[in-house]
Amino acid sequence: MDQQAKYLLKVAGAIQAGLLRQPHPRLADAEATLSRLCGQLEGLKQAVGKLSICRQRGWHLAGQQLLQDLRWTVQELGAEAARSERVVRDQAEPTPTLRQLYEELIQTEQEFDEVEYRRSEGKLVVTTAPIVLEDIRLGRFEIQLVLGRLGVPEPRDALRIVALEPNPASSDERVTHPHVSSEGLCAGDASAALRAALISGRICDVFLLARAVLENYNSGSPFVSLENWDGTPCSDCGYCASPDDTFYCQGCENDFCQECVSYCRSCDTNLCRGCLSKCSLCDEYICESCLQACQRCGASACPACLDDNVCTTCIEKEKHDEQGNDSNQQRAGEDTGCGQATAQAVAVPEHAAAAAGPALHADGVGQVGVLPRPRRHRNRRVRRHSAA
Image (cartoon, rainbow, N blue to C red; front, top):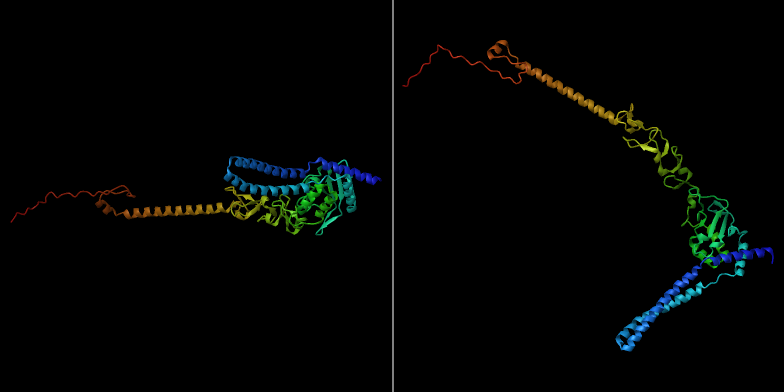
C-alpha cells in the first residue's frame, strides 16, 4: 500500500469517527414512528378486553357497537404498520465502512484538483475553479467540510465556504457570493439532497452539490442580487444604487441614493436630509451655514426670508404697528378739531351775553346758563273785569 492510500485511509477513519460521534437523526425518526404504532396497539389491546367482557356478560348490543368502532381502529393500525415498515426500511442505512469512505475520497480527488485534509482543524477541504456569474468575477472558493459536524441535519453547520479571491458585494462585505454570507451556504433547492448526503456520509456528493450551488445563480433567493452587486449602498435606506445614481453628502461624507438626498435652497450644496434644516418661515431645506437667526424674534430663517437680519414676519408686524399708530394720531387730531368748533359756536356778542345772563366757560361742559327772573312793574295795576 502506497503512501497516498494510507493517507486516504487515515482520512476515511476520521470521517467515520465524525459520523459516529453525532446522534443519528434517522434513529429519532424511526423511534417516533414506532412509538405511534405502539400507542395504537395499546389501544387495540384495551378494546379487546372490553369485547371479552361484553361476551361474558351477554351484552350483545354493546359488543356489536364495539366491533363497529374496532373496524376503523384496525384499518388505521394497518396503515400505521405500513408506514412504520417503510420508515424502518428506508432509515436503517448503516454507517459507511472504511472501504466505502475510501472510495468516496478517491472519487472526490477525481472531481477536484485540490483536496486537502487539515488534521489540526478537523476539516476536509476542496478548492473550486474561478467562478464567474453574469460577468461578475467571484474568484475561487474553498469548500470546507467540518468532520466533527457530519451527520447533523443542517448543511450550514457542517460546511464553510471561504472566498480565496474575495469580491464581496459592495453593500455587505460578509456576502462573498449571492448564496454565501459569513461563510455559510444557502443551498436553496439543493438543501434536501445535501442534507441526505451529509447524514449518509456520501462525501463526494456533498462537495459536488455545494459546488453546483456556487456555480449557479438563483435570482429568487440571493443574499445580494447580482444586479446590485457593484452598486453603492445608500447610507439611509440601504438601497444599492448605481454610480450614476449615487450622491455624496458633503456634510456627513456618506453616499446616498437619489430619494434620500437633497440640496440647500440657498447655496445649492448636495446634502442628505439629516444634514439639512428647514427655514421656519418658508419650510425649505437650508444648510446650517446658510441658516441665520432673526435679530428681533430669534427665529431661524433662510437668507431669502431675511432683510437686514430681520425676518419677514417681524417686518410685516412692524408695518402693521406703524399703520395702527398713524390711525390713532389721525383720530386724535379729528377729536381736537371738533372741540374747537364747539367753542366757537358757543361764543356770542357781549351785549347778548349780558342780556342772556352769566357767562359760561369756554368748554361749557357741566354748566347750565340761568336767565335772571323778570321783575314785576310796581306801578302797573291790574284791572279786574267785573262779570256782566
